Length: 97
Image 1 (tube, rainbow, N blue to C red):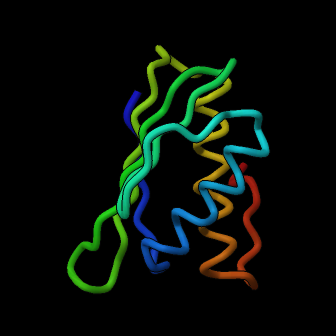
Image 2 (cartoon, rainbow, N blue to C red):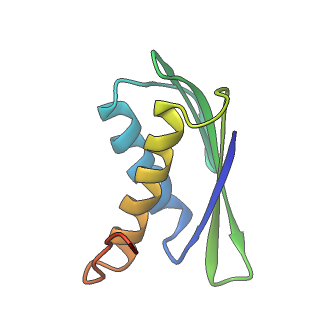
């Protein structure tokens, strides 16, 4: 699946958070460069890339090798919440129902 998120964090902060978050889930960091990471493990394989967009935002794109709503895909969405909390620490994320 393909997931994406826009945030006001710098690409370095986004990648630092990814290194912490996905390694804590038990994924192993594979290939890495200045703007991307590859993580693999029991949950599956994912490729994360970041790029500056319009000068104000960082575009985060994640591709997983899973189909549908797998555990890896759900954890990618939780990672996007981590990024949101990092950018806006006072914002309370809650369900809309």
